Image 1 (spheres, rainbow, N blue to C red):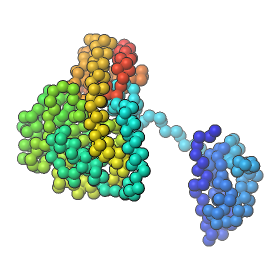
Image 2: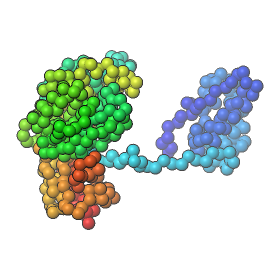
Image 3: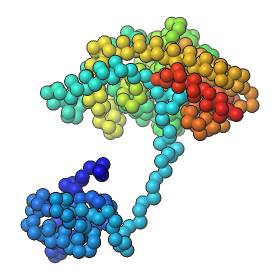
Image 4: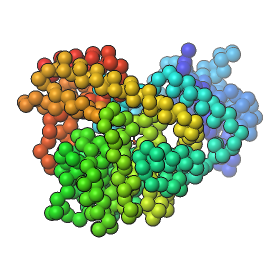
Amino acid sequence: MDARPDLSELLLIGLDRGSPVPVLRQLYLQLRQAILSGAVPPAGRLPPSRGLAARLGVARNTVVAAYEQLVAEGLAEGRVGAGTRVPRDLPAIPELPAPMPAPPAATPVAQHYGSEPFNTGRTGWDERTQRIWRALTLRRLSTPDQAMFGYADPRGARGLREAIAAYLRAARAVRCDPDQVVVTAGAQQAIDLVLRVLLRPGDAAWVEDPCYPAIRAALEANGARLVPVPVDAQGLRLSPGLEPARLAYVTPSAQYPTGAVLTMPRRLELLAWARRTEAYVLEDDYDSEFRYAGRPLASLQGIDGAGRVIYVGTFSKVLFPGLRLGYAVLPPALLEPVLAARLRTDWHPATLAEGVVTDFLAEGHFTQHLRRMRMQYRVARDALAAALAAHLPGRLTAEVPEQGMKLLAGLAPGLSDVALAEAAAQAGVIVRPVSPMYLTAPPRQALMLGFSGHAPAALHRAARALAAACG
Ligand SMILES: Cc1ncc(COP(=O)(O)O)c(C=O)c1O
């Protein structure tokens, strides 16, 4: 059976009554073109004659006559009960356009985002969460509330903003009112919108060196001139000689990619700079929820009394990245310009996804999901560390993190992280090389390995494959 849907009723045909070309000929020519261009594919059905005649406001005989002409030319065939179809094998027609060259299956932009270990994007999703998610989705879809099906608030649904604000106040000590929250398509969109508003071409922006590549790309696309700021074990290291900047992009709770936590003295120093120079701090708190040891530091935003911090978070880590939901907590002065930029982009978030997440948070499932995933991820983290020690001793040194969903493994001297990542990809194992994330600081040869959402046995298998790829 042909799995393709029958689109014949949607076929684009229009008749011009004022044209000197007779209606029958217009119809014949348009159907012929539809067949030759592939709009109706080989073996595809032409619209039923009665329906097409009604749609076009012509006599059915006119449609039948056009079909008969196509049949006579071998461009269509009529069978009782099957309607009129395009033959499976079209005759060779000189005017048949050359097929468009097929685009490559993978391009540098549409990179590989599969789920193979040690892909870092993956999250856990157990049977219990799946069951709850299904029930909440059905309930939202069954609502008689028409608001769910129409255009909505560009800030995001009020209920979701309230739930996010309550969560951030409790878990991250963020100071926020639901009306400062803008729900976005992930942290990436939140940051891009803010950059569109804050940056003028050539504005300086401080970035951590090394830096998360996707946000570096967003900064550059928005005209920023990047000013690399080195990172050490205490996070971003400011120095008196740094040139002034409009903003600083930072990942204080777990620096990407090193994992360093920005210490309190450094936080205060950064906030003092922002206040003094009226710059903004863009706090990307992408990965603070899964802690396995030690005490987390509260958000930077929570200790800023001057409205200079823009806090950004995401559901990509705590739920799943395909959901495409994140948020920004904005200083009030930025709210209107960011919402204007949002309206120009995509109007508002998808209401069904918002509704489900609102209920998931408000009804307590989120906390339970986080608790279960934290346990699962800790087991996966330990399994990965053990697997690397077993299969790659002396070549990879794992730095077991106290939080998060990925670990960094330093390479023995002489090994190249880029070469190793390429060899591993050939074996179906996805690892991220860290050295390309450096701007000007001397790059470290290390791999970033995701463990969340992968079963311990799969992590062991992947470590073995990585060892084989290592040669
Ligand atoms: C540093 C950093 N920021 C933000 C994100 C999340 O992006 P999004 O919410 O758009 O999925 C990620 C995801 O990997 C990340 O590593």
